[in-house]
Amino acid sequence: MRVAIVTESFPPEVNGVAHSVLRTAEHLVRRGHQPLVVTPAPARGAHCPPHSFGPDAGTVPVVRIPSLPLPGYPQVRIALPSRQLAAAISGHRPDLVHLAGPFVLGARGMEVARSLGVPAVAVYQTDLAGYAHAYRAGRGLGEAAAWHRIRTVHRAAARTLAPSTPAAQDLTAHGVPRVRLWPRGVDSARFHPGHRDEALHRALAPGGEVLVGYVGRLAPEKRVDLLAGASALPGVRVVVIGDGPSGPALRAAMPGAVFLGRKTGAELARCFASLDLFVHTGPLETFCQTIQEAMASGLPVVGPAAGGPLDLVGHHRTGLLVPPRDGRAVTAAVAALAADPELRAAYGRAGRADVTARSWESVGDLLLQHYAEVLAEHRGEGVDGGLGVGVGSRAGTGPAVGLAGPCDGPGTGPGPAGVEDVPAPPTGSPDPAGPAGLPAATVGGGTAAPAPVIVEGQPA
Image 1 (tube, rainbow, N blue to C red):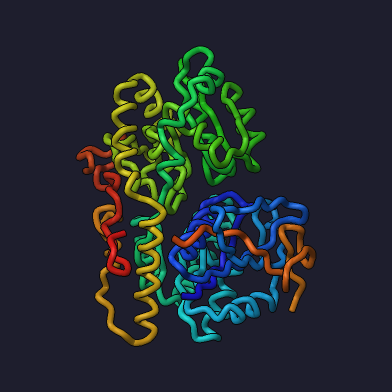
Image 2: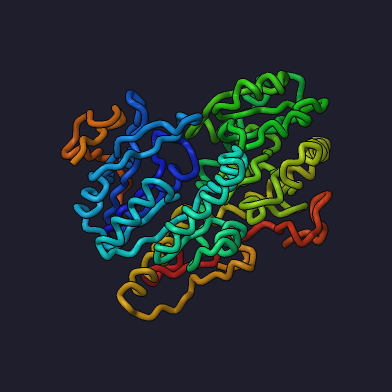
């Protein structure tokens, strides 16, 4: 199968969209398929690290479209109008177009797919309407405009894939049809309690403090400021991993916290495992990959009772859910867990048990089954609807313009027709009581692994 992946973000950017697209491309190659990635070019001079997935690795072609920085948030790149998008997609001769977080480049990708008569799968990954509200874009009009854009793009898709039950419900409530669930995987070998580094722990907590960590972008929508109360608790040391525009303000608000900057790979895994407790404060997460990585690392989790965390955190089983945007509730939850090492250990064990079956391989095979159903529907064949997960239930309870070269900016760099070859891998139970201040009906009980999926006669 030939798949054109049009994404708003790709490495060297570090975020959930970029990571899941990279994992998707890896899996397609492993299963013998032929992906193409089309993405905005990063800033001129940005370093694109080589992606090597083994000595027998193949390559994934990556076409980088000239782009400009998003005003006020230069880390985000917006692709400029370019004929190269249509040329790249049509030249790949795809059977299907995968749109990752479609909004600007993805919307144009949808137009190209329709012009070619190729079905498109739109993957909803970012709560752009929520971001518009958080940034007060257009004095309220921004949120409505964002939903209008989301509806327009996703209604044209053969299928929309949502990462969590709340995200699927939100899409359906705003008029998006044909919504199905597709969660995310986690590398439970990389993120593992065995990577705990006691020397690192002692260095970060010289007085024996409980290390409470946050990992992610430092941006207003993440509400990392809600950790200020926890950072003032006696016997607690807040550790912040990540960077972003809110960094200076957060350092001023939490002088006792440790800011480690951005970490990746094995270093990030070591940092995760060396924490005692993980807290995510952002109320706009459609999934929240860092929660999964924390759980795989054996950490108890405190998260908001909103969005993706509802599917991930078992309240009073793998962690605590608190009312979103409530700093006092965050502080109280951290204080309770900081004072009870046995409870932290129990939640950590339960959390890891929940996520170990959520491999990227099984999630990748689930995506391939979605592709197969969409292609069958496109050909007019009947499908059994095995992936039609109702959005009313909790997810885990069932199943010719110059191109950018390798990150050197528009119109520069080597490579045939501006295509960058990136090496790819070888083929080959809810608590009956809700969190404080919330009725029980508003909180999730966390999830087990996704239901088994049969692909090519083998269990995923």
